[in-house]
Length: 309
Image 1: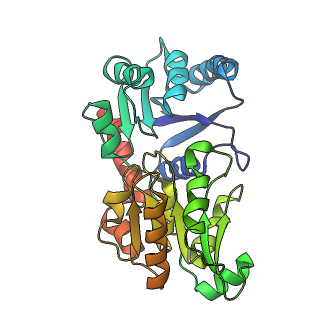
Image 2 (image 1 turned 90 degrees about the horizontal axis):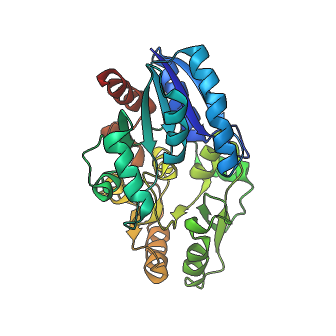
């Protein structure tokens, strides 16, 4: 089976998002013939140009499946694969907090345009009001391995006597709400707690930050199934997160993980305080294995969707 992966190529580190690359490689390891097509540039002109480029690749490669990541790339894939035998699969990676035009448009495409649609959390499926396969992104446990915290702190250059709360995104991305993280940490009134943004790092370097940190903080306003949560869990890193995507489901019952309402900076601060007072590590890695959230298991689920169409 031949598959073309279509995804945004605007990341400053690498051509596509790390989780897309990871899923691509996991499917290749399962024996699929994989081709990667990054959509380069921003704005509608870039996506319009991508349709023509992808159409040439589709005609040359003659894939069985064109798998697009994000709904806009789904449009590119649909138009490029038109009048060919290729089936179009679209992964919806975010959530839809409001019943707006985008939600109605995506719902229409799911029902009438795309051959299969994957969502990353049940919450997104519920928002769309359509029965869909829920397949979160997996974690490569051979990449995200546990190293001693003292060793990892030295590798990150963390100072002794400080408690490091890492926040893994670009602070300029408004939807990630770095301001909520700043306000919550300021409410602790504790100079020993250091809020440490980690971004624009190669994906394979993230493991040392998860192993070094006293806590990983996520304050997004909306998410699908945030990969950073699963990667932190794979390293047994304590977590505080807003209640977005599938975070409540995946962390439920994992000691050392805390979930607070979106925008409740006082509640987020309370969770941070509890996590830091608790100290130690979690058993999040066991949960990843228990729920079948490794890259190998997820690759098999995606392959079964391909085969069904």
